[in-house]
Length: 105
Image (cartoon, rainbow, N blue to C red; front, side, top):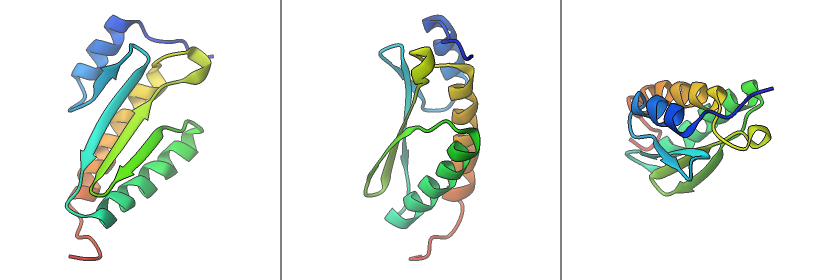
């Protein structure tokens, strides 16, 4: 079973991740900005595949060219190592997607 990281552990791990923030000591959150709507949708599809493969699903909201992602582990009632690992994978995916040409460009 996964155990929640302490607030200090979460802060230290988030410091290693670009633009991720801690919310209420129970979430890590990040807003991604894309050059157009479809690039953001491509990103959501890609991280959805990663989440499904890990059976760990983030909250995702799409606001035109912005995609907001929130990670937490319900069973642990907070942020776990799995959330940090997924955030790392999402960052790699973002770097890949933001350098691709969207279907409208």
